[in-house]
Image (cartoon, rainbow over all chains, first blue to last red; front, side, top):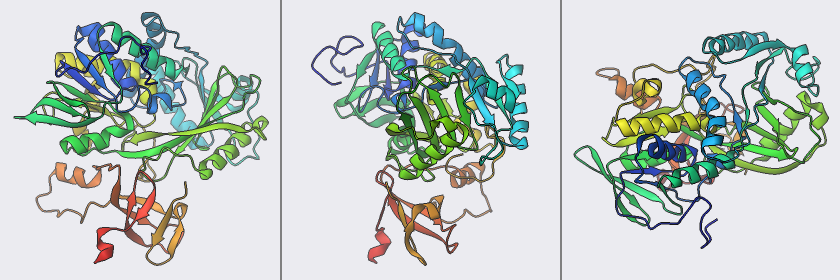
Length: 407
Length: 86
């Protein structure tokens, strides 16, 4: 990882004392933004500053699911563009991102959930995204392993089927974007911790790092779950974010049985079968903010119970590997992308919760445009920081029962 | 990773008996002269400290009290707050 050999993305370079733009966080949003800054806007004097190694955070910990069946009119076009970019990026980067558009099957367990799905599907169809409402029998035809009997905790009433979604190999996206960005001259500095942002007369002047000061007029913080703490620590800007550990696990490899991504809100469980045959599955977030990224017996048990109820053929199958990552949740389940607001030259891209992976390609493209033109692109405007004080929360959740850290 | 919370009435209990109630932000701001920015700051905004923070908890599956503790968000361990020594 940090060997003396040449890194996989290109040549190792010396950290310079100044750059046109500095990006804090070597995750997918940072890498994609750097890639598009260089490719589309000719801004190649860019440094990505990463405390650990690229893809250490959410980029390498998510369950690799991509889809564009969100709820609001602001989110759907953004995720749809991100979804359409996977085959394009595979060609552009000349890197196999292993996009498998196997489709997503989102199970509904009540008539209320079916009603909410109808609205989500109408939004998707209005925006030209393929999404259908199907009944339990049709769901069973798509995934014969499903248990559609009525004697489980949450019987399946039907499902939202979204054929264009699927799975992308997340590590490949990290490596492909790193190599792609580096080809245009972007520098990646691992094991370099950003410790502060210097400002003068309301403008960014420099970024302080563990390896010295870097002069720059533009800085983006896109550090996934660590963004909110960094932004408050460096600039004193508080964010409407709660950072929660979200857990995931994979089973031992099995013969092919799941040819779609299957998810269930009621069971708090989503699962897909990897090309190796393991069932990769994720759980709900921890109920209180923490940065531990550790698994708990509580969720491993919960996951086993949920999976063995709606996919009973998985009973007795062993979990092989478990891990955790961070989800930075906002009250309206939608991200915050803004810039030049508090401080000129300071940009933020955070609050993605568990949606950071599926959005990274399109967000990189538009954040790069934002930083290059210094004007917020139309598509990103609804995601501004000030919407909370204007009471313009976005409504990604159908109905808020409680205001808890995870919504 | 086990989380335990010390309820002032019931003592040290399993963390899943409690509901997290947010970062401690002090008293609710006065209505007079309240700006949307100040209200938003009180309702939504967090410091998201990676370290020790003072926070609210509710003993939902217990006595029903609301109380504050200090907890290290990087370890999930309760720690003694500065008030404990007074």
